[in-house]
Image (cartoon, rainbow, N blue to C red):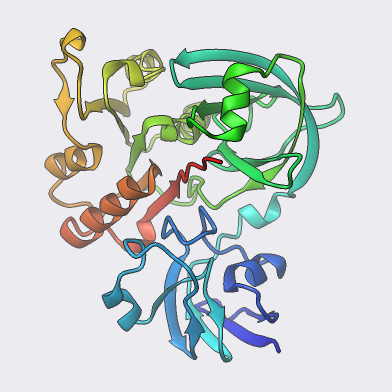
Length: 338
């Protein structure tokens, strides 16, 4: 049995098939709702059910709290309708204009940026280019049918190669192979682009970028895109890591800060090593933002990293600093080990 879902405020309608999630049906019908992980871990797809009933599905309890369920909130990536629905959700129109492709690619370059971070460059067939929005990601299609998602670290205009930053997950079948056996010129397949984590170009609000670890990758692509556009918007990047060595490309945002008067860079270490002789900010990266801003009501925030970082940032910024919920854009990295 299928159910009709109406999206407010747009009034768009679509049908959800039996055993299909609200998000999957919306995407199938060409309505791009915000999402990140698609498995109930990140909260990017969270919206409100105005009318009707849903099965909330499987999700992480810190992503959808009991008081939010009582308020009518749901994670559309895992929720399924039990009746016709009216939902309140933002629609991303720009992403829907970008075609999703399945393509072969060749590993052009492998370069260790840190002990557990690998830069990978992919070369597409000579007659292909991947059109994407800065901040989106691709899915590697593995031989066993599984997928591994990685954010694109280069801006759309520099599309000769696709650049990825891969964190080694011990026990992870794919990254174990990347770090131990993969060679340049190896052939892979991927699908993309995916995701609603991209710059809202129609806005002129100042932007705060919050990166945790390799969450720097899509933000790098976003910032390089904005610099190429000569955007006049004010931008600040907070990049959080454990120790200095984990800021694996720190010289790049340092150079951006020297070259662009509307950009500033604030690195934050949670556990600096004694040999780091660190004189900069310490603690959790979202806390540094809270310390620096009393009022975020006029800002947009773009956050990328581990789900717990994204979750506490969203909570702190919206509930204690007045950031509108629709001005918080995020992509959560959910690492998978086999």
